Image (tube, rainbow, N blue to C red; front, side, top):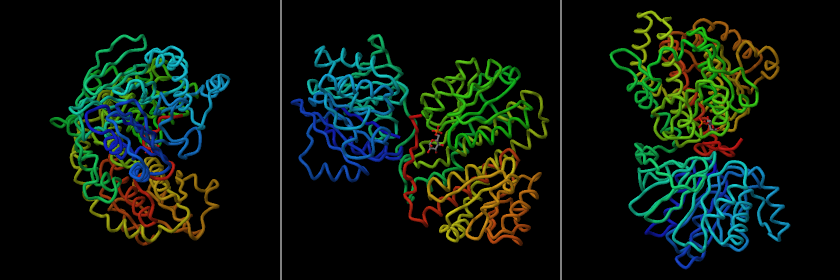
Length: 612
Ligand code: G6P
């Protein structure tokens, strides 16, 4: 979702801003813009609907934007359609205050009316213009910039990450945040603000994370951060380990395929630090057995693919721990008055660690006294910082909007946690434990074997890419996986796709089975394999085509019945999903490729969803 970059340094700001915006493109956006302040205090703005490339063209075609201080923004429209006027930066009426903003100002209508009554004219439909105008109103009234910042922040309700320029202060930019990510980068050639670290990697690895209600004043050689009471805060500096190449395509045509191919490595990096001498360790949990022994129920919360990991987790944790476990969409959990208390474990899963609904669900769980555990990829993100415990997936930066390697590492951690907790509850035999660890160690190599079968998947994708409708069916963990397979397909190929528990097909959906429909049957869970097979046959009997995803030992049986079988090696039940997901990701990728879709940046989608 929207991205912010800001720079205050020695060199011209425009190239730095544009490069930063390009790095933020993956978050999802539909317009972009920059504002640069020159030494004599003139703020020039350029903004445009569409891609950064077209903003770049506009900048090159028009009068230059001189200056070494500036802010830039990629906008994912919420208030007002994506067009040039609604794009950020937004300015106050006199042009003195210019703002970029992520988040939503909930009371913007009321403030807009307040200002309109005082003669303010608005050009856009955005809530952000209200911020710029309101700040200008206070600045003109009070004559003090920081007073104006704090008065404006006091008045607005909602979430925000803000980058602010003022024409009377050409050497500085101001940043503020509440419930939307913003970090500060400390470079040798100047200082930066950004929504996420990928925009800064080529300039600096030293960052600090702005906390809610903090305000930063940034010049080329100084960063001063104030809290809500205007006291100076001593910020802790962090060094980012991710390297630049991890956030570049490295010869692949898309980030998505690169990230799919990186999964054996990502899985290896996630499991190895937690595996020693054949034992699983989660030092992050304080090695406290009471953690799980006192637990009477488990909620696993997330959005999108992270929620789908939650569904897998529900099956795994409940079956092995014999503790009731529920997967819950973050957006539903927070408003559902859930039965959560001190003996509930709430696991929040999030790649970005910034998804607003997941963050709000986490806060709700904490408010009700639950123990909270976050599984997060982005280090230092809001969810990681607010949960009682955090376990990081070491997937590295994930750029494609459609998650793949982060999903895989989340799956892995849920599986490892299941075994870890099962052991702490004394419910696993040494033999079972060893068997699991053996398969865990073999997982990266088995993932390589699955990836080597890409040719077969490509062939299957080129056969079916023209269809309008697909259904993913399976039972138990295969059903949970189908949810993700279906989401991957629809988000990047725009083919209508749904996922069903195979047994549910007969209760309505079977009426949609006819020639031209594809059913992807996932049949790897031994105990329900035959039943899924029967459900698939019910669909093919009505004219639908079927592709089956199964383990090598069962592939032969299916080959007799269906035209395409995607096979994977067998592994431990608790790790099978990690192998199964790969063909489904590749299938979605090649279907989308055949259809000529913008795979890394699917329409309307955002990588990190920071609004409700
Ligand atoms: C967006 C992304 C999905 C992701 C979901 C949750 O919808 O496009 O890929 O699964 O947000 O994001 P999170 O960062 O919390 O995992």
